[in-house]
Image 1 (cartoon, rainbow, N blue to C red):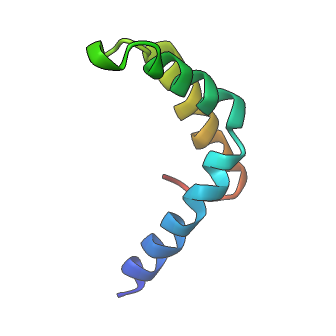
Image 2 (image 1 turned 180 degrees about the horizontal axis):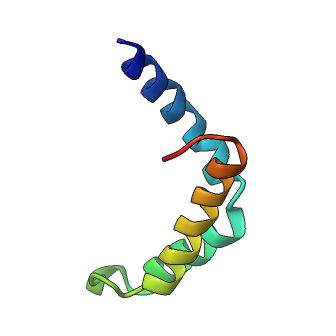
Length: 66
């Protein structure tokens, strides 16, 4: 069950990685919140991609993967 332990440890690190991407996360949240009644797939794709890349980079710097 070593893989389960490693996965749990990685999951516990997500909050740190997400917190390190505050500006990107805020931009994505602001985009989505502009029109909550009509949210559509791909509506904020550029903002999401920037946030995703930031989180992936933070994970990579920590020597982990998502």
